Length: 368
Image (cartoon, rainbow, N blue to C red; front, side, top):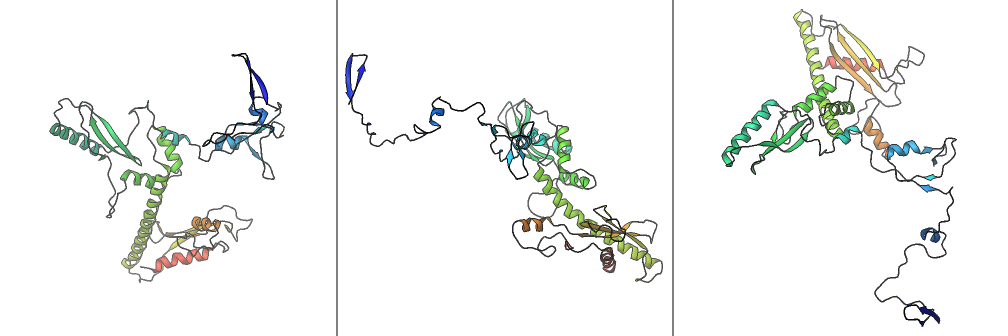
């Protein structure tokens, strides 16, 4: 038993050394470090750390993490000083999400921006929207002084859908497509003509989806998403490749018809010149095996039968297959070429052969 003084009453009170049992239905607080633990004093204000102790830094983004942290030859991550010695800072793992770039941050809504951004709108579709909304507003409401403004809008690549509303009454219109569509003859949402035309032009230029987004952002025009641009580019590339093969077939048939009009037999020779280019300029110090370190070879045939001198056939040998590389990295045993969706037509161990390319071009001439 212990005695303690009560300063309010001036009397001594006795209490037992035993701990008071917890109230039934309540849990004892066991959070934190118990007394006697090395970190117990640090939590209660009695820090035992020295000035040279490690300091935890706030979590950084991917860009700042790669700039601050360096990897040693053994694979360890260190925070060195000017002399290359490890510092006292402890860096947390970087944030898992990707740091937004300039165009991504441009897509975030800005409350102070208002309606000052530029839009690509079809003039005829835009005039039709305003005229229909004015007529519908006059028929459905009693408002005599309409004041229209943009109510909702939806971005479709470079194009837009918009609806109007009147600020003097509760009128709002439906969504209007302010762009023309490509007719495909199939059900579902059709692609906008402007989005398809953009990738047709990009195929003849040296810039890609990233640069076109930067250009649009500099023009104060909301750029399309990178995923949408790449998806449309793949569809346009497929259609363009098929259209190119059909056009080359038409040119070969035209050349054969020219021989027939000249009174030559149908199987008469055609004067062409063939050249092959590789995606590598290294000739390996010899001219007998040029381009053997390349992964792609493109052969083109130019007609000298007429004065037009146009390309009438081509063939490309390729060892590249992104799908096959991805499957092999995941442990799937696939061989290129040979699996579904493979873009390679030559095995990686086979040399690129101009003889094989010329033979494939000859087969194109033999087919009708």
